[in-house]
Length: 249
Image (cartoon, rainbow, N blue to C red):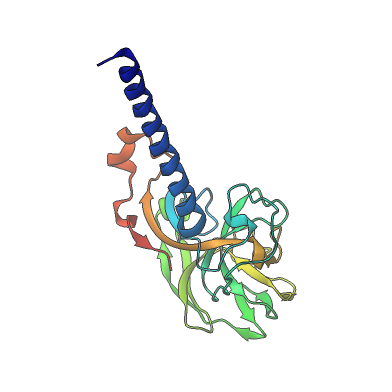
């Protein structure tokens, strides 16, 4: 084999590797943009439904696609393509309206046109109280983030979606609010950890449909103690096996 042939063979091999890498990156971008995107839970605002250290997949196609479905959210179009409306009770990842560089995750409780208000810790939708039943207490700091027992209430929305909420502080400042009227094309979001959630009652405000990223679908990994998944030596004591492949409700 001549020197030229050897050089050509090496060059072809390198080109093939580069081509495979580029194709893999493009495939990953397509999957991330159109299908699934992984997210981690950085705060306790959705306890007990979601815990810090949960890693979950968000389905990007659930509500169609907006500019925020793309990496870095380029301002190349407005509105949503193939859009569909979230259902009341969906747990949604969205871009924080005051600063779209930040991702938030909350539960949809108010749809466009709804009147939302909290009275004595109970959620009211269009003047009708959402059924709220105390189911007991949780005495597990990994779930509640506090060292004492916490009351747990089961809420059931008008469409039948039920979920647990925490009541860390009875008669807190967010247990009684003004009435919020959700504008057209917007949604009202709340965290399940009602006394420790910055949501539409506070700084989040109404969330435009364009800011929706996707629906939280399944927890694929979970680790306690604010540990990184890369700290493999901590897995035996900190990985929450019971939360693996746990569907988000």
